[in-house]
Image 1 (tube, each protein chain N blue to C red):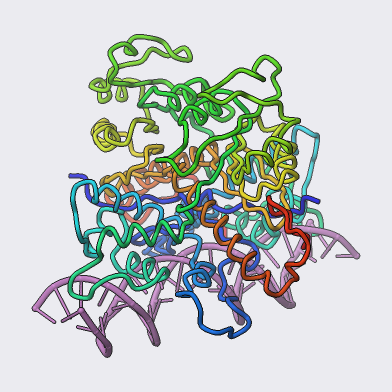
Image 2: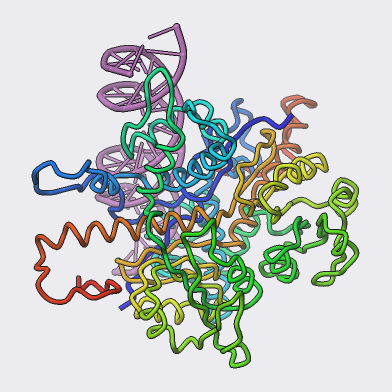
Amino acid sequence: MAAQRGQRNGVGDTPPAPTAAEITTPIPRVAEVPAARDRARAIPEAAVARLAVYLRVLSGMQEQGAGTVSSEELAVAAGVNSAKLRKDLSYIGSYGTRGVGYEVVVLIEEIERILGLTRKHSVAVVGIGNLGHALANYGGFPGRGFPVTALFDVDPDLVGVPVGGIPVDHIDDIPRVCAEREVSIGVIATPPPAAQAVCDRLVEAGVQCILNFAPVVLQVPDHVEVRKVDLAVELQVLSFHVARRADDAAQGDGVAGMGPDLQVNGMVVS
Amino acid sequence: MAAQRGQRNGVGDTPPAPTAAEITTPIPRVAEVPAARDRARAIPEAAVARLAVYLRVLSGMQEQGAGTVSSEELAVAAGVNSAKLRKDLSYIGSYGTRGVGYEVVVLIEEIERILGLTRKHSVAVVGIGNLGHALANYGGFPGRGFPVTALFDVDPDLVGVPVGGIPVDHIDDIPRVCAEREVSIGVIATPPPAAQAVCDRLVEAGVQCILNFAPVVLQVPDHVEVRKVDLAVELQVLSFHVARRADDAAQGDGVAGMGPDLQVNGMVVS
DNA sequence: TATTGTGAAATGGTTCACAGCG
DNA sequence: CGCTGTGAACCATTTCACAATA
């Protein structure tokens, strides 16, 4: 097992094969549920991520007593343009009122439903080093809904010790413990060399969604969803921008100042 | 100040305005430098992130004594398809040999150059909580090149205490310290409410690249580059997939015999 | 011959702009 | 009248497929 496959996210990145296509209901089937679930398949991954952002912004607005928002307001708060926001919302249905806007409560409800946040998702963290520790201590990640119910490590000194209230189990127990606690999301925070093996065990245990913090390209079967958070990549992308900026400055000077002659390190290529 | 603007990355997301377009040299100008720097501007952001991944894979290969790689080998190891890989590499130049492949050393060199990794990028971490601690202890992030040279927090009990070898300074000293130590990348690991204020100070201090771990949409001027790592969003996107999967199973059942015991944790035959 | 480098086609995502509607 | 919802235009990125070539 363990077919090769790139992981989503990180930055751009679009699924290798068919992911968010319109392969919805092959059979006409009698129009049933609001099609909300059929619809889900058609939402572009990028839009899904933005919906999560809108949800957070909306929650903030709700706390401040807002009853309705216009696409423009919400868009500004979320840092996107309003057309994109409306298109994103249209993927989940038509919950706005023309001439008025959206009811904050309704939107929150609908986005939560589409994102599957009405259900609890048990999370297991593997690798209780600096980062794993930090993650475990979040104690039920982002505003509940993602309770951390299992921790794993290889270090015998850690096994048995409770971190953030949960005792650390040995990596060999991943299959058993994950099954028992119905873990649906596995978080990998191990050193790079251990990541693939840990991933394999999680998959064995039936975990279908993995969040990978290890700087490693995981190979997983097709039915497993991997998202990665890659610090090195993030920094290097920023580094690229620093470099580009520096070049711009250097070049820009030339343009503004001197005339047509400018071949510092001449050498003609294509 | 502080114009509104969405931040890149996270997942899909494409720059609001013109970012990686082909707006290169507006004036024909005499063909000069290897165009390496002009080229930089034309590299799609998504490709930049992947280059960082290729770089890591290549380093691993180099350590194992590989002298050359074919696009196919490298692609598999990086989890992308070979056409994409070749296209990505073509953005930085033509360093391969037809019929043979690429010299590992050469590629490493060129990618490092494009990503600006030949220069050191001083990093400041703001917010020394669980996560900030973990980050500070990385001690010179991913394989050097990104030395952490400054730490900040508001907590008076923390100020002055060294973490990972670097003494924590007070947030009010961001401008001075960042200038002194020539910080080029700021990492925000504060609680959400503090993030925007911290961001503003970093910008004031001249920091042009920010990596934001706080679940907040930062508003920054156009010349500042923000990338974000958003745990909540990542988990919620995974949650979406769990939900989609569940629906698939429910719907699919009607077709593919729901006869036998369909297990608890997935493990679909497929 | 094997593999790169790249036009051109295909796909997917974003933005425009306006019809539709409360 | 104002704002949503969306078809259609536009743009970026990915993939195909093959000519170029060491």
